[in-house]
Image 1 (cartoon, rainbow, N blue to C red):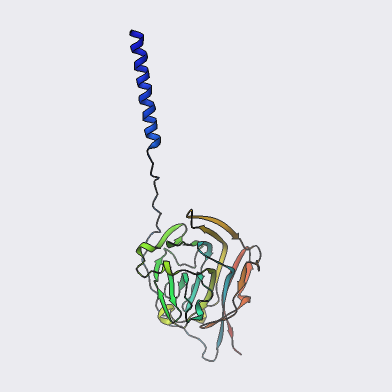
Image 2 (tube, rainbow, N blue to C red):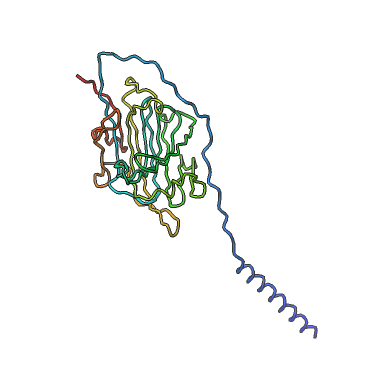
Length: 288
């Protein structure tokens, strides 16, 4: 009887342990989602128009640059390591753009921007543009950096999905516009495939970029690499599609703009490969 009692106890203990393990296995475990690290906040400093002297007898033509992909993308991650350009009166951008937006009429405008504008030397503007050419809907927000934006390289990134658009600097979240907090319904209005573009130009809107100072030219945007990722809407994951490190110019992937852009003409010759980087330039040429 003594031994029977012993084995009975062992059996009950084993059953209890087994049941405990089954309960543990059957209990669903909710994965921990770490919050995204956000970029630090610095004071936003607005530049002012400075007085400068130019020879009244000299007139200039200005030439900018625009680099854009042959392919258009429906959602994805778009990343570039680059040193942006800055000068009063100028705009330097990395952006996504529906190629027919400018046509107007019944055609929608779809665009997602990172822009360095002449009014802010140590900041960039994020923006979504929807609506139509004649009635654009925008949502501009500025993000300030610790140092002048043209003084060092940073990794800039745009994530575009059906549910949100997010902007990153050096893998730190700068801004995220989600369908759930988008009071202008812009994320859901991004319904067209968009090309990836970079451009450098001068605007005639002094309230936006200040007055163009030709003494500050030329300037240049230097891009070390570009990475493009596909987005899977079923798994909500990004997969790298291609990387361009610009050892040479890939004409099967990229095109160069050749049109007018307010104060400049976009010139293909203002896009060059130098030391493993692609360089966009804004230059001036004296009119004889």
